[in-house]
Image (cartoon, rainbow, N blue to C red; front, side):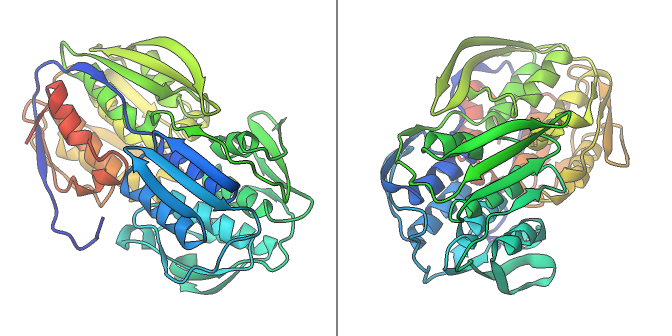
Length: 447
């Protein structure tokens, strides 16, 4: 999404019951990685259910710039003819990741392990986001930043290692992106690359490494952590990937159904990875009526169908150690908390300050605009719920170019007395291009 496009405002008004059956878009994390592993495999990888949002399409373009042949065969159906580990081409154009921190950071890991030089850039929002946490461990592998903005921010030029070194690295903060970047760099290094994390983070990279034939071992480390060891220089085998539905995207219609009286919604094929299901766990603790049907596995990931109904929610205390399994869902959880009875305390949200926007500040502004009482104490967000249907609303949500704040603001308005206006819904296209039309089809009042 071009940072200079004219904003696209939208207003969500108090809605009648939401009804229907939907499938949320393909998981963004798995979509990025399916393309990248296609690039790093020798041969043809077929992908079904790929999320065709702006973020993932930026990764597809970067894979093509690094030597892969990338073709769209139909809706969500893509084919990647890869070059294999160690055989990337020098990109002639800038790798522009738009709004996608995940794409940029993962691809930095890929470039770091190869003797190529690439220029990374993104939109105004991505240029503000920290890259140093990824670049520091990649420097240990042998990569160098030749030019870059202050604090390791974009735009920057990264020179990959001629002779990449295997490293043992302990992540300073829980971050699947940092872990993944180190493992992707380690693919091209001889010997074993090890990442130690004190808090387990989403494990899509490890699952896909194994699925594509790499030798990767995962063992517990400490109370909540893990040690991941990868044997470098594998010959990755092309594989067919069916991308499951994104739990972070499914979260928005799911919470809308919980909040709008009389609603009942079936949501098909949602990823049920235990390192990604913190929101559903929390909502069930709050009293949400969420039924699980048909648990199965697709593309190496656990998947389930959900049936969700309007529920009277009660405030809860959300422990800090749950944050890695729901880090992208806190804005929509704050919306659910606004309609719950009693106080919800979400602990340990420091990571929200370095997302697409300072998401903690953006959530606070959104709650204030809706007339909801809240407090921020350190890294905790405390929301005083007003009960079902009793949020005043009537304000305007400033999205700060953040797709999740935009969708959360619309869901907030669907059950508010006076609705809510969102200043710019254009950025929703990065993760859920069909969100507004789909919500309208279910009965949502969005103008």
